[in-house]
Image (cartoon, rainbow, N blue to C red; front, side, top):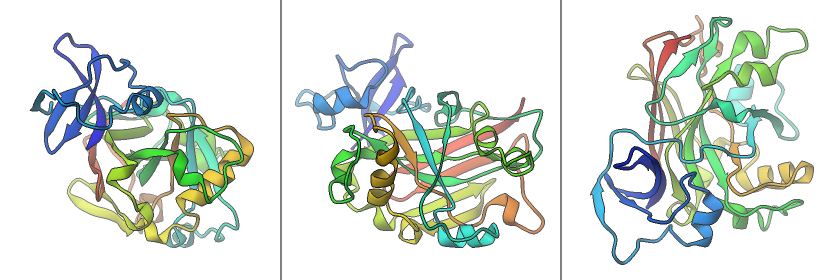
Length: 277
Protein backbone atom coordinates (compact mmCIF):
# COMPACT_ATOMS: atom_id res chain seq x y z
CA UNK A 1 0.00 0.00 0.00
CA UNK A 2 1.16 3.52 -0.74
CA UNK A 3 -0.08 7.10 -0.49
CA UNK A 4 -0.40 9.25 -3.60
CA UNK A 5 -2.04 12.36 -4.98
CA UNK A 6 -4.12 12.42 -8.13
CA UNK A 7 -6.61 14.71 -9.85
CA UNK A 8 -10.21 13.76 -9.02
CA UNK A 9 -13.23 14.04 -11.30
CA UNK A 10 -13.45 17.75 -10.50
CA UNK A 11 -9.83 18.18 -11.64
CA UNK A 12 -8.77 18.93 -8.06
CA UNK A 13 -5.85 17.38 -6.14
CA UNK A 14 -6.99 14.42 -4.08
CA UNK A 15 -5.15 12.18 -1.65
CA UNK A 16 -5.52 8.48 -2.42
CA UNK A 17 -4.22 5.05 -1.58
CA UNK A 18 -2.38 3.17 -4.32
CA UNK A 19 -2.16 -0.60 -4.57
CA UNK A 20 -1.22 -2.76 -7.56
CA UNK A 21 -2.49 -0.45 -10.30
CA UNK A 22 -5.56 0.73 -8.39
CA UNK A 23 -6.36 3.83 -6.36
CA UNK A 24 -8.85 4.52 -3.59
CA UNK A 25 -9.73 8.17 -2.97
CA UNK A 26 -9.43 9.30 0.64
CA UNK A 27 -12.49 11.42 1.26
CA UNK A 28 -11.92 14.16 3.79
CA UNK A 29 -8.15 14.09 3.37
CA UNK A 30 -6.50 17.48 2.94
CA UNK A 31 -5.96 18.38 -0.69
CA UNK A 32 -2.28 19.09 -0.09
CA UNK A 33 -1.91 15.48 1.10
CA UNK A 34 -0.37 16.56 4.41
CA UNK A 35 1.46 13.45 5.55
CA UNK A 36 1.08 14.53 9.16
CA UNK A 37 -2.70 14.62 8.82
CA UNK A 38 -2.78 11.41 6.83
CA UNK A 39 -0.69 9.59 9.41
CA UNK A 40 -2.74 10.89 12.34
CA UNK A 41 -5.98 9.93 10.62
CA UNK A 42 -4.54 6.49 9.87
CA UNK A 43 -5.39 6.74 6.18
CA UNK A 44 -2.50 4.39 5.42
CA UNK A 45 -4.87 1.47 6.07
CA UNK A 46 -7.66 0.52 3.67
CA UNK A 47 -11.07 1.91 4.65
CA UNK A 48 -13.74 -0.78 5.08
CA UNK A 49 -15.88 0.82 2.38
CA UNK A 50 -12.97 1.30 0.00
CA UNK A 51 -13.97 2.12 -3.57
CA UNK A 52 -11.05 1.04 -5.74
CA UNK A 53 -10.68 2.22 -9.33
CA UNK A 54 -8.01 1.92 -12.02
CA UNK A 55 -5.01 4.18 -11.36
CA UNK A 56 -4.69 7.26 -13.56
CA UNK A 57 -1.82 7.68 -15.95
CA UNK A 58 -0.56 10.75 -14.08
CA UNK A 59 0.30 11.16 -10.40
CA UNK A 60 0.88 14.50 -8.70
CA UNK A 61 3.92 14.98 -6.46
CA UNK A 62 3.08 12.97 -3.33
CA UNK A 63 4.55 15.70 -1.08
CA UNK A 64 3.96 18.97 -2.95
CA UNK A 65 5.17 21.53 -0.41
CA UNK A 66 7.67 20.07 2.07
CA UNK A 67 9.08 22.58 4.49
CA UNK A 68 12.58 21.24 3.83
CA UNK A 69 14.18 19.34 0.96
CA UNK A 70 17.40 18.02 2.49
CA UNK A 71 19.97 16.28 0.30
CA UNK A 72 23.05 14.21 1.13
CA UNK A 73 26.07 14.35 -1.17
CA UNK A 74 28.74 11.72 -1.75
CA UNK A 75 26.94 9.12 0.36
CA UNK A 76 27.78 6.07 -1.76
CA UNK A 77 31.43 5.13 -1.39
CA UNK A 78 31.88 4.22 -5.06
CA UNK A 79 30.25 7.49 -6.14
CA UNK A 80 32.61 9.53 -3.95
CA UNK A 81 35.55 7.68 -5.51
CA UNK A 82 34.34 8.21 -9.09
CA UNK A 83 34.10 11.97 -8.50
CA UNK A 84 37.64 12.11 -7.11
CA UNK A 85 36.39 13.20 -3.70
CA UNK A 86 37.59 12.08 -0.30
CA UNK A 87 35.31 9.68 1.57
CA UNK A 88 33.30 11.97 3.88
CA UNK A 89 33.87 11.65 7.62
CA UNK A 90 30.40 13.09 8.25
CA UNK A 91 27.37 13.64 6.01
CA UNK A 92 27.67 16.27 3.26
CA UNK A 93 24.40 18.18 3.42
CA UNK A 94 22.81 20.65 1.02
CA UNK A 95 19.24 21.56 0.14
CA UNK A 96 16.87 22.36 -2.68
CA UNK A 97 14.06 24.90 -2.86
CA UNK A 98 10.46 23.67 -2.91
CA UNK A 99 10.19 25.00 -6.49
CA UNK A 100 12.31 22.03 -7.59
CA UNK A 101 9.53 19.56 -6.73
CA UNK A 102 7.69 17.93 -9.65
CA UNK A 103 5.88 14.62 -10.00
CA UNK A 104 5.90 11.55 -12.16
CA UNK A 105 5.66 12.29 -15.91
CA UNK A 106 6.37 16.00 -15.34
CA UNK A 107 9.15 17.46 -17.47
CA UNK A 108 12.63 18.24 -16.21
CA UNK A 109 13.39 21.66 -17.69
CA UNK A 110 17.00 21.96 -18.84
CA UNK A 111 18.03 25.57 -18.12
CA UNK A 112 19.31 27.92 -20.80
CA UNK A 113 22.28 28.79 -18.59
CA UNK A 114 23.60 25.23 -18.16
CA UNK A 115 24.85 22.62 -20.62
CA UNK A 116 25.98 20.06 -18.03
CA UNK A 117 22.76 18.82 -16.42
CA UNK A 118 23.29 15.42 -14.80
CA UNK A 119 21.08 12.67 -13.36
CA UNK A 120 21.13 11.18 -9.84
CA UNK A 121 18.71 8.44 -8.73
CA UNK A 122 18.00 8.43 -4.99
CA UNK A 123 15.93 6.82 -2.27
CA UNK A 124 14.02 9.61 -0.51
CA UNK A 125 12.96 9.43 3.13
CA UNK A 126 9.69 11.15 4.09
CA UNK A 127 9.55 12.35 7.69
CA UNK A 128 6.30 11.57 9.51
CA UNK A 129 7.03 12.79 13.04
CA UNK A 130 9.03 15.91 13.71
CA UNK A 131 11.75 16.42 16.27
CA UNK A 132 15.17 17.82 17.08
CA UNK A 133 18.23 16.06 18.52
CA UNK A 134 16.77 12.73 17.46
CA UNK A 135 18.92 9.78 18.50
CA UNK A 136 20.03 7.18 16.02
CA UNK A 137 18.24 4.56 18.11
CA UNK A 138 14.86 6.30 17.76
CA UNK A 139 15.34 7.79 14.28
CA UNK A 140 13.18 5.27 12.42
CA UNK A 141 10.23 6.20 14.65
CA UNK A 142 10.26 9.54 12.81
CA UNK A 143 10.09 8.03 9.30
CA UNK A 144 6.72 8.00 7.56
CA UNK A 145 7.80 6.24 4.37
CA UNK A 146 9.86 6.33 1.18
CA UNK A 147 9.61 7.50 -2.40
CA UNK A 148 11.73 7.64 -5.55
CA UNK A 149 13.71 10.82 -6.08
CA UNK A 150 15.85 12.35 -8.80
CA UNK A 151 18.49 14.84 -7.69
CA UNK A 152 18.96 16.62 -11.02
CA UNK A 153 22.24 18.57 -10.95
CA UNK A 154 23.78 21.29 -13.11
CA UNK A 155 27.47 20.37 -12.76
CA UNK A 156 28.76 23.56 -14.38
CA UNK A 157 27.07 25.53 -11.59
CA UNK A 158 27.68 23.06 -8.77
CA UNK A 159 31.43 22.86 -9.39
CA UNK A 160 32.34 25.37 -12.09
CA UNK A 161 31.39 28.60 -10.34
CA UNK A 162 33.43 30.60 -7.80
CA UNK A 163 33.43 28.80 -4.47
CA UNK A 164 31.41 25.90 -5.83
CA UNK A 165 27.69 26.69 -6.01
CA UNK A 166 26.10 23.48 -4.72
CA UNK A 167 22.81 25.17 -3.88
CA UNK A 168 22.41 26.92 -7.23
CA UNK A 169 23.55 23.88 -9.19
CA UNK A 170 20.98 21.70 -7.46
CA UNK A 171 17.96 23.98 -7.18
CA UNK A 172 16.91 25.03 -10.68
CA UNK A 173 13.15 24.72 -11.06
CA UNK A 174 12.01 21.09 -11.68
CA UNK A 175 15.31 19.64 -10.38
CA UNK A 176 13.68 17.36 -7.75
CA UNK A 177 11.20 14.92 -9.27
CA UNK A 178 9.63 12.66 -6.63
CA UNK A 179 7.02 9.93 -6.69
CA UNK A 180 4.94 8.43 -8.06
CA UNK A 181 3.76 7.65 -4.48
CA UNK A 182 5.03 7.24 -0.93
CA UNK A 183 5.39 3.68 0.32
CA UNK A 184 4.64 3.65 4.04
CA UNK A 185 7.29 2.40 6.44
CA UNK A 186 5.43 -0.80 7.25
CA UNK A 187 5.60 -1.74 3.56
CA UNK A 188 9.40 -1.36 3.53
CA UNK A 189 10.51 -2.29 7.06
CA UNK A 190 14.18 -2.64 6.09
CA UNK A 191 15.49 0.08 3.73
CA UNK A 192 19.12 -0.89 4.35
CA UNK A 193 19.57 -3.02 1.19
CA UNK A 194 17.23 -1.68 -1.50
CA UNK A 195 18.16 -1.64 -5.19
CA UNK A 196 18.34 1.85 -6.76
CA UNK A 197 18.64 2.33 -10.54
CA UNK A 198 18.68 5.15 -13.10
CA UNK A 199 17.67 4.24 -16.63
CA UNK A 200 18.31 6.82 -19.35
CA UNK A 201 16.55 6.22 -22.67
CA UNK A 202 16.32 2.51 -21.85
CA UNK A 203 19.98 2.13 -20.80
CA UNK A 204 20.88 1.43 -17.18
CA UNK A 205 23.31 4.11 -16.00
CA UNK A 206 23.21 3.61 -12.22
CA UNK A 207 22.61 0.33 -10.41
CA UNK A 208 23.45 -0.20 -6.74
CA UNK A 209 21.79 -0.78 -3.37
CA UNK A 210 21.40 1.24 -0.20
CA UNK A 211 23.72 -1.29 1.48
CA UNK A 212 26.49 0.87 -0.03
CA UNK A 213 25.48 4.01 1.87
CA UNK A 214 28.31 5.50 3.91
CA UNK A 215 25.79 6.99 6.37
CA UNK A 216 22.55 5.05 6.78
CA UNK A 217 19.12 6.57 7.33
CA UNK A 218 19.21 6.65 11.16
CA UNK A 219 22.63 8.32 11.06
CA UNK A 220 21.35 10.95 8.61
CA UNK A 221 18.30 11.75 10.73
CA UNK A 222 20.41 12.02 13.88
CA UNK A 223 22.93 14.29 12.14
CA UNK A 224 20.49 16.66 10.43
CA UNK A 225 18.25 16.98 13.50
CA UNK A 226 21.19 18.35 15.47
CA UNK A 227 21.04 21.40 13.18
CA UNK A 228 17.35 21.95 12.52
CA UNK A 229 14.06 20.60 13.76
CA UNK A 230 12.66 18.09 11.32
CA UNK A 231 9.00 18.55 10.42
CA UNK A 232 6.40 16.09 9.11
CA UNK A 233 6.62 15.98 5.34
CA UNK A 234 10.30 16.96 5.18
CA UNK A 235 12.24 15.04 2.52
CA UNK A 236 15.73 13.59 2.83
CA UNK A 237 17.41 12.60 -0.43
CA UNK A 238 19.85 9.94 0.80
CA UNK A 239 22.54 10.11 -1.91
CA UNK A 240 23.18 8.66 -5.34
CA UNK A 241 25.02 5.53 -6.55
CA UNK A 242 28.00 5.53 -8.94
CA UNK A 243 27.46 5.96 -12.67
CA UNK A 244 26.57 9.65 -12.87
CA UNK A 245 27.04 11.31 -16.25
CA UNK A 246 29.81 13.70 -15.21
CA UNK A 247 32.06 10.78 -14.19
CA UNK A 248 31.70 8.93 -17.49
CA UNK A 249 34.24 9.05 -20.30
CA UNK A 250 33.06 10.84 -22.30
CA UNK A 251 30.61 12.61 -19.97
CA UNK A 252 26.88 12.07 -20.50
CA UNK A 253 24.64 15.04 -19.80
CA UNK A 254 20.88 15.30 -20.19
CA UNK A 255 19.45 16.71 -23.41
CA UNK A 256 15.95 17.57 -24.66
CA UNK A 257 13.99 14.45 -25.51
CA UNK A 258 15.75 12.23 -22.95
CA UNK A 259 13.61 9.99 -20.73
CA UNK A 260 14.84 9.41 -17.17
CA UNK A 261 13.54 6.56 -15.02
CA UNK A 262 14.38 6.11 -11.35
CA UNK A 263 13.58 2.54 -10.28
CA UNK A 264 13.65 1.49 -6.64
CA UNK A 265 12.71 -2.00 -5.50
CA UNK A 266 9.69 -1.99 -3.23
CA UNK A 267 8.52 1.41 -4.46
CA UNK A 268 8.23 1.59 -8.24
CA UNK A 269 9.38 3.75 -11.14
CA UNK A 270 9.53 7.54 -11.39
CA UNK A 271 9.60 8.68 -15.03
CA UNK A 272 10.39 12.17 -16.32
CA UNK A 273 11.10 13.50 -19.81
CA UNK A 274 13.60 16.31 -20.41
CA UNK A 275 12.75 19.50 -22.30
CA UNK A 276 14.65 22.66 -23.15
CA UNK A 277 13.78 25.83 -21.26
